[in-house]
Image (cartoon, rainbow, N blue to C red):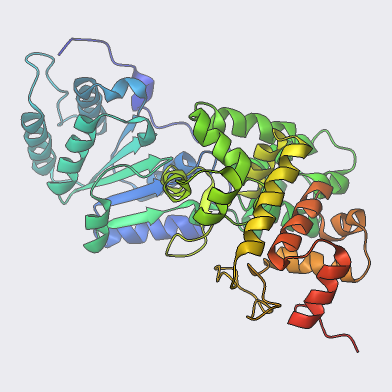
Length: 439
């Protein structure tokens, strides 16, 4: 192997920021997995959910030597990866020697030497592979897979990544040897959001405003942080909260740079065109986009943690994170939006029976008045306010949501109910039990 200098910052544990919210429930869950002898902790979520920060906090509380390696694109060179890996291990315990630069060892030789040296020191050790999503090399994946297969009992591995790696994860789960931390686990709850704004950001907000931002961001840590940065320059904090969404310039810039940039053009276009939908299924997406491969694309987006969440275990229905959907829609003209919504409405009308989506609510039923797809909870709220005679602007103010979001909910309601006006929606809602029957 070429004797190149090593960038020492790749081997350093990133410095923890002050004022961080302590995530006790997650720290406890990670420690429980370690106590149960799990080989691997996999922290897989989109950017900005606090993966690295969580690992920092946890390893600081565990009290074990830590070998830390922050990966980048250059580590797709197998020999370079091995050299950095050995250096990280040697940094954690000086009894583990760095990899010799000459001669270049075979992968199996390097693995045997590493495993045997870890076994020899006997003391517990943690290896952190951060930003693993940058790895595309099959050889590197194969080495890590073999390390997991022959892992010493005194070694625990943590992988932090934006997407699930092609490692034997299913086998580890079947053997109860893995701790999974996903996007849903990393979301801030209301108490964590309250601590974040009050202690970390030092911003005074009402309980209702904090709850609104937590709901709007779906607990996305960076989304809350971007909202906090913007709030510092706002005189009317409550008014800002009511209007906060994916059109905020900080949110747009972050998602454009960290999520959307570099996506294949066809994939980006698919996401834009399907962002007008509240819920996504493959047949519906095919109808809206004119494609025939929507199921494969939806599964690809889910694997890549591109802010798409499945709504059922069968992967029949999905939804985008609300802020990402807002950002994607910004690039569509009103004419494009109307055309896409019309295609969705036509698809809904073409269905002969109600689709049993995972968000099923009362009133879905069957027969001539059956809903093509049940309304979401928020859509039901909007429908009730429509029945009370509130304007779009009044609904937005009442629910603390943006005016554009209200219009999107109403379009979804019309499509799912197979109607074209408020009057028709109210009448059908009374008939199906979505709203109390009129006397």
